Image 1 (cartoon, helix red, strand yellow):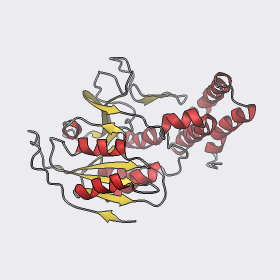
Image 2: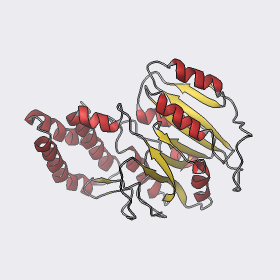
Image 3: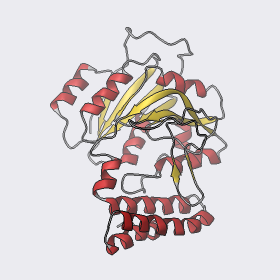
Image 4: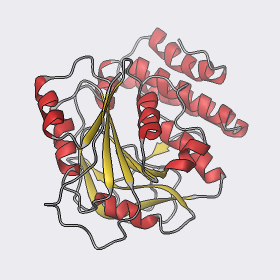
Length: 308
């Protein structure tokens, strides 16, 4: 593993009028992506908040020439290579490397507005705030003003609606596309669980539940918008190409989430939901009966933390 570290210095970007004392660490894990990552980094290099660093945790099998040239041309970006891909491990590595009081963890397939860091950092003037996200949209989404945003139901359904136009002072979890935390707080609660399997789904509800247990709020700010461009090797593609395996991981992580956080009532309440959702996949996508059993087994494997 290697790291390239330099201080940020882009004087051509006009500073915002907010307090610039707090150092923010932007952490971007990436795996086998080039074009979208470079677009994300370029948008982060144009922020109106100056006091920040960018850390790329690169888990790629190989670093493309295009990406290598970009890294070399922008030495203010700290690049850390990992020799094994794992979403939660990559995020945790970035948090551990971060120097900032606030860490902003983002996907590598987004483009952010120049005021994103400013919007995040303003919320931390309230000491009760422990984490938060800003609005995130994808192509084709309709406009909504719902307040049913970023939460998980007692039976395990994850509700995102991160494209809502309504800001909310306190939600149940962050959105993985852009989520900030007080660095010491996320260290105190044990970071992201590396016991989660598959694409790491449930990582945000899990760490946020631990943060909320300590009495902290999680904000959702809809006054600025992050654009998300899902990639062919991402979460959506995994569902389409290996649906049974994706749902095995989701159900496994859901059971592990309830169990490790002592939510045993919800652990039982989620059993019918898992069975019905697996049945829906079985019928709608014409999966095999063995696929159905495999998906459902994920939940019970998660109860005993025995991933297949």
